[in-house]
Length: 253
Image (cartoon, rainbow, N blue to C red; front, side):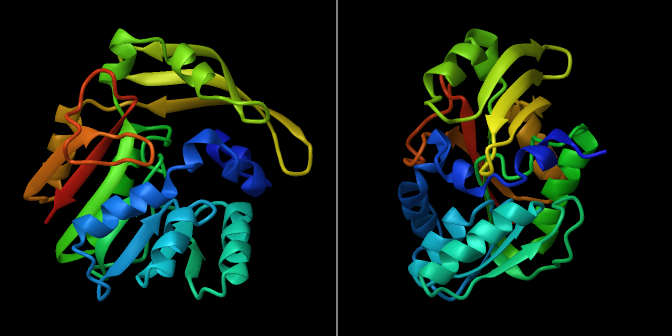
């Protein structure tokens, strides 16, 4: 039986690119470039690359990127977009819980819940972090975003999502937050690129900063910094607070 995150992204490439949260690509890549000191010699792995928006933008800027995703239709859309721009990018189908890479990349990015936090158990989410760590070279860097568990303690997730959803986007209903597991349960209503309507029962894991720090320490990251993640405007100046729906994590070996 397919999980909700597998069903949601079937035939959802074009619609995905119209979702509000996909419109910060250029600013996010500006931040990534700054973090790697504009070094065009490094190799980048984009886990949960989706339709390839970060991989394509970084390749346009002269970087070597490999993009991996679980969804055939998202990868197909990524390849189409790369082809239109005459870009040679290796987009590969892989499950982030089972990646084949070992010490091959100087930077791993995992943005916009590109796998991590979507899994149905904490152990699976940890597998994804471990595989991201394994893919890195000795002095490699990991940059990812994840859901901030401080946010639902002070705010309504439903109000936040409703205010960031426009006509034609996937819509979340019946949202509840479990304080014991830090998991949000909801029902997503979406229409795919073929006009098929879907109703999916989803759950996502929110993490506290201390949990993320501890998980990364067990994977031998020596430097771990966590900030608020502002769409399209990642910055080390944004101190994480309960106002941030997502957090930006930067970890170095």
